[in-house]
Length: 146
Image (tube, rainbow, N blue to C red):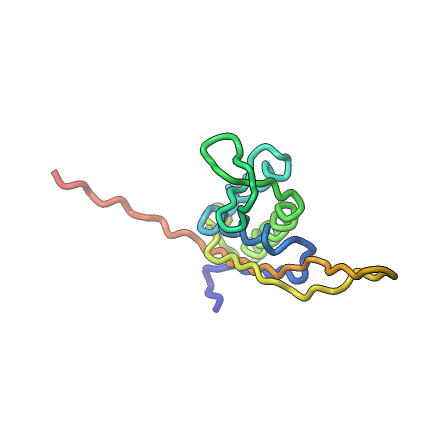
């Protein structure tokens, strides 16, 4: 249910791996919209990795204090497009774009059509992603007791 302080975007049948989308979405959920876009641009340039917490069998550790991680470039590019569309939706609705926080980001498995061909069929990877962003409420600092 969308309120007046939220913006929403849905990507249907994106040609990306659902497993990669799950890991990216888990990482950027609850983060600022602009920081998420900047991080995903670095991922698509192979500068920083996405930490893999669920689908990490056989995934090597990455530099820094990370553990297992990968660079899902294609999935990052598609999610950046969705986040840019979400920002445009928020501007159109009159929201403060700098204060947007990703409240929900839900990847779901879509239909898997067959690649056409004469020999053995191979399923295509498809994913639905729904993103809801909300304006962050400014927290008032309480007066410290002395």
